[in-house]
Image 1 (cartoon, rainbow, N blue to C red):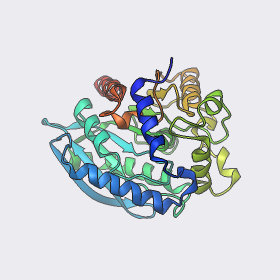
Image 2: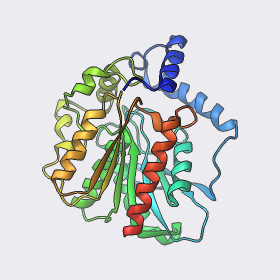
Image 3: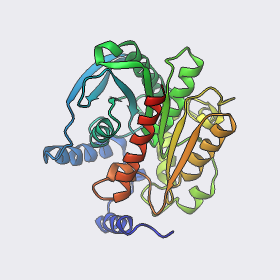
Amino acid sequence: MPLDPQVQTYLEQMAALNAPPLHTLAPEVIRQTIAMQTNAALSAGNLEPVAKVENRTIPGPGGELPIRIYTPQGEGPFPALVFFHGGGWVICNLDTHDALCRSLTNAAGCVVASVDYRLAPEHKFPAAPHDCYAATQWVAKHGAELNVDATRIAVGGDSAGGNLAAVVAQMARDQGGPALVFQLLIYPSTSFVASTPSREENGSGYFLTQQDMNWFADHYLNDESDRTNPLASPALAAHLDGLPPALIITAEYDPLRDEGDAYGQQLIKAGVPATVSCYKGMIHGFMSMGPIFGQGNQGIKESADALRAAFAKK
């Protein structure tokens, strides 16, 4: 179907700004711009309320690791979602995904532990997956302290965070836990060697570009050999059986659409219950744009419903 009218308007407005393309800028410049925009949005005070928000630091492989813990209304102990933000492993942080985490906390009725993993190029692969796995282990070990039921833990994330969630699910299976009940993969990157029709069709003009993805990969990976490492490309893992059930959300006009779908089909072939849900007319990043795109709110609801169902089964 054609672009959603809300998306078309958004893309036209972005083009009118005539801003330099992301891939032509230094990470520091992009981070500063994002910080200014995010601070302005947070200062507006239109935050969805949750029962409690707590910033903490926990032990990580590279030192102290910041996390932000969102707790919903209710008695608990609650199930938990360990969430990894997107941003190509290079940009974004806890604040950029604050609104999405608040929405998931309330809609899914779970604690959300958002992880501020180390970013590239200062900390290249595999710093990010090691941080994310360590944070997941920490949440499981400190369930009582967090009012969390440690037998009901899911992982999730968007874009690069979806990649990290898929990787952490594999690490948990292969390295002795924790036992995860679900993985929420929102328009994930699943392979650094993928060559797909959606990358060709949607590689320019639809927010995330192929040149941007090359820029992210160049900053994140050490060399070409990292591309085939399953900790970077979870679709290349030797086997996918034994992983937790998954919801994979994709967008029709996203260059990552096909690899998200392919990973879902790989999971299903391996006997893992998986659903791939493609949002027609949408672009990469749409779920973080709920106030702009109506389908963003729909994606949050679908994600929350899937999480609730997985937590209830456990």
